[in-house]
Image 1 (cartoon, helix red, strand yellow):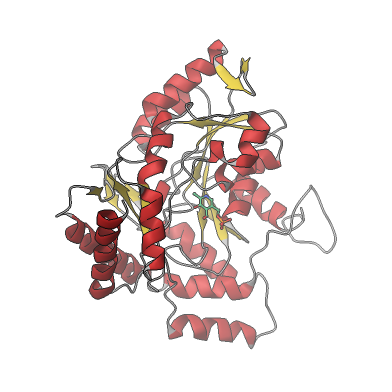
Image 2 (cartoon, rainbow, N blue to C red; image 1 turned 135 degrees about the vertical axis):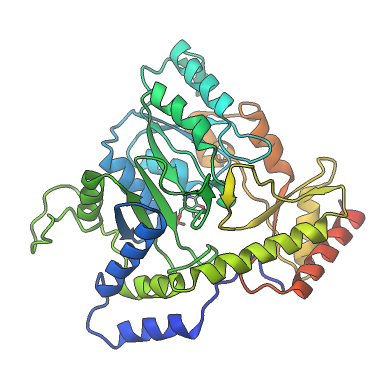
Length: 386
Ligand SMILES: Cc1ncc(COP(=O)(O)O)c(C=O)c1O
């Protein structure tokens, strides 16, 4: 089976993890600090706070920005469910913005339109019109590693006084106009699940230039302790969102060859785009002019709308090639439809795109031969069942 994703683990990673295992310090030690320092440098941020997952990172940023029950947060629906869930953790309300059909990222015009509708009471939750006094947060998502058009959305966010949390969980190594993803909001988050550009097993990190946010996140990841981590002295409500030292060592070792990883992933993406160029029924990922570097996360293609995407997935999976639909809209997840009564039709672009997008196997060590098998199987699937 050609897997959808695979981590790239070298002897450097194994050595680093073994070193930790042979030490007495298995949580938040030297590697946690090294990992944080290196990610901060990469994201051009003053501070980085490593935590146990990307979800934990987003949650702590929202908390540090003072989220309260009943606050509204704008987020795309074409994302992983965690982007919206973190608002619900705090009884805040996610409202969904539509995406650009090319980049699959927040559409600036749709954002402006949604904000105007909130003001005019033209947003519907559970079938009722709601008038929203003030939206407090915006969470743009650099989906699949493609940066959001920050020059277009930042002035809108500023005009509406939105606090921006950048969900860069999929975009380590991506650059918008030469500036790294993760550096565009009040704070940003990266995630390190094994399908990501680099992995820590499970893990995530907060990056920010705001010292207060960093301080609060450091405290809240560790049960609300004070800065000196004093024994059983808890200043605020906190969590156990600590990263363990084995994960941090793994992540740090991965970062020592990040350039090689990003280069290889880019080569895999370029090869796919060349192999797929001959077919008019499939579109490779669109890279906007403003994207000066892509830290490739997954390789998602868009099939012709007439093709039965789900049958194509089924065929590929039964022929030794993993493929998945990516993403299923968050607003149409059973949990969200129960909670907010959302129905199809409210986000036309998201809904249309999500019916024809498909992630095909993509990982750092992928060979040309494997890619040829994937493309051949995809073609066969489209011809036979699509
Ligand atoms: C866009 C996005 N946001 C948030 C997350 C959450 O990260 P984690 O799975 O590490 O909690 C992910 C991870 O897959 C993601 O892709």
